[in-house]
Image (cartoon, rainbow, N blue to C red):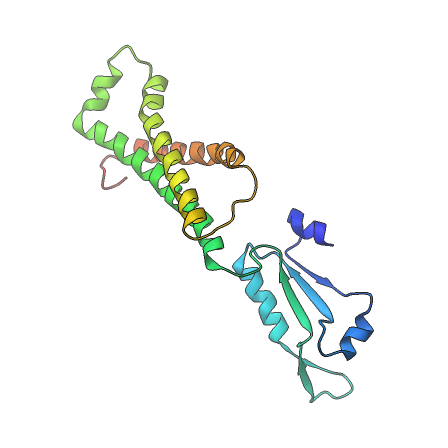
Length: 195
């Protein structure tokens, strides 16, 4: 069922229409539809390979026929445009690298120069100090996300379905995880090069 594919319960489904027997005889119509979650290019390529596989019939084992009447229907990116897959993935990679690297290197640099010890001796608590260090990077990441979304929509015509506000709210968990990873890296490394 299509709703299971849309929910993500399954990745590939086969739909055999009620008039299958008539469609098999008619060479101009698809007899079977392979429904594919096209958000994963690997799954889509597997479905394309399944369609291209030869089939041997029991009545004539040496005769093979390709599945010419099978239609593949991807549910995500039906035009199979590379930008639709690359831009969201690029957003995740750029934001992850920025958050981890900037946070880790900045705090290690402060420790190398001796500034971190000076800041620790101020009346500011350790939590306030870390929050103060990471807030600028959160602003950088939010602006990077806005630039990537605008670039994808305006120049590459990548559709944005749903609320952008929801994207930013859901992305806050991603931001928090990468900030925490950057802070972890900064605590276990001693030089910027190691970080």
